[in-house]
Length: 313
Ligand code: NAD
Image (cartoon, rainbow, N blue to C red; front, side, top):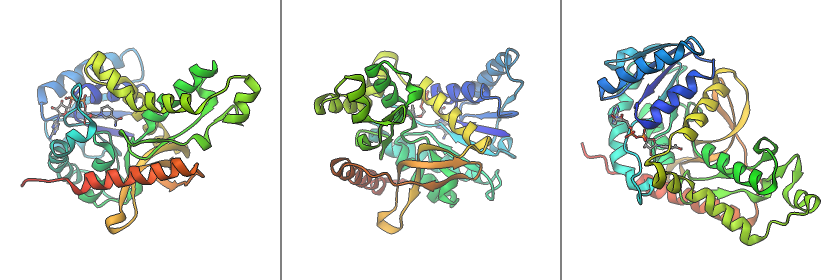
């Protein structure tokens, strides 16, 4: 499998490392408008490959280098600075995607390519990418709330002293401040959350649930305050998504794809079955009425931001 990564900053580099370590790719091409940076990253990663999976890694000096890519990962664009929200990046990164997408589409096979969008504000960028590529929505996949879901599972695992692998939980909606924890769907070791809490004698009050939801929302802000940007978590999330596609795993991941029509069209994260053909089936969980209302609100936030894109020619 050949992977192209567009944008080799903190995130693109972490993605490249994590994807290489999956063992599911044989070739990786790195592209950045800063060609020196891409070349240096390809050299560094190439040296690292000596110690692990033998992946052919190169930097492309122009978009022809991505020809033959099965998956294109878009990680280019401005990141959040301390105090900025993801939405603050809207028009800057819309312009970046408007530059990148036509070049990508001129050099890939539109019948088969899958595009993974990482650039923020994530869901709006998924909608824009889908519009510009005209690809079927199941093949334009945003990492969405995969990372938020991982954060939730980690917090719950710590709370109860169990492995995050035993926690089944989803964050849905926007990859942003309006995301929603689906509390009704949380299971631990196959037990519904309330039942699990009773059996382990650790109550989870409404206040604690609200605190946990808040910690999921604020995780990125805290990391950005501490180390300037986030990259390891998203690198691992993208690698997991690539593995799921490459290996046709049909795992259920909270990725973002565009659904709906006309003014109701929106991309947001729902549990979706992901395999070689992309995010093929979207599932609708039974949520509490409060969480369901919050999810509808999240969709409205994303749509409003999408409508606010102002692409200056
Ligand atoms: P960065 O500034 O370190 O790197 C961005 C890179 O994009 C730079 O190397 C830059 O040269 C390149 N670039 C910019 N415009 C380009 C263009 N038109 N063509 C090609 N390359 C271009 O930023 P970062 O920390 O790597 O973040 C990248 C994006 O990922 C940001 O939008 C950030 O918000 C997002 N992000 C998303 C998640 C997620 O969960 N989806 C998590 C972390 C970061």
